[in-house]
Length: 113
Image (tube, rainbow, N blue to C red):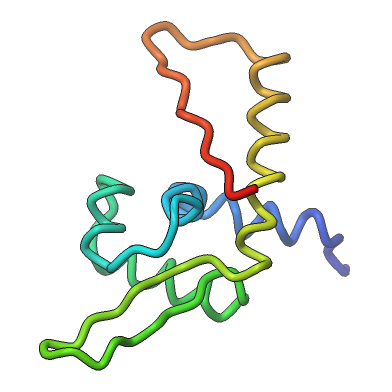
């Protein structure tokens, strides 16, 4: 049975840490360690795996800088930046329709537009 496009997208976005990574990169390019600190709680191996998957899907772009020691930075592609609207729509729906958990803090909105 063939999956629908929306189902495929949700399957990718529901992977642990993916939305956190995209949300962090909406603020601009980041090095691996900076991204890890901003995402918080994601171990380096998992972060590497998620970034590789997002890069293979064309959501994230990795740039290797020719410095000593070499360093990399990660940024969203146009496809990745398009997720800003998707995340905003999900946030709006959740605020309108889901009960607020006690002690929960609203994530600050981050937009590239």
